[in-house]
Length: 87
Image (cartoon, rainbow, N blue to C red; front, side, top):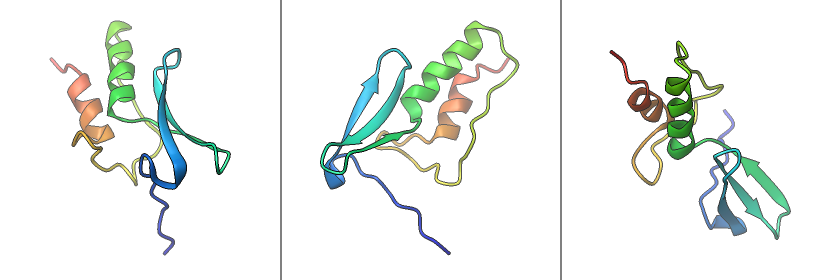
């Protein structure tokens, strides 16, 4: 079974940035000339806030096989659950 590549902030020259318009993080390595987009607990909280403001019936994200706790100790699933504001 193929092991997924893990990207650590600062490892391999990657630096984390925040796109204020899209409200999502991304990693960029100038030396590798690679750009990686992803969601984290912070961006999921923004998305859940939007879903609540729009009175949407739910939320989803595409892939969670690598959903691990972030540096803050929160996974994407935890962030979605925390932001759902269930009655």
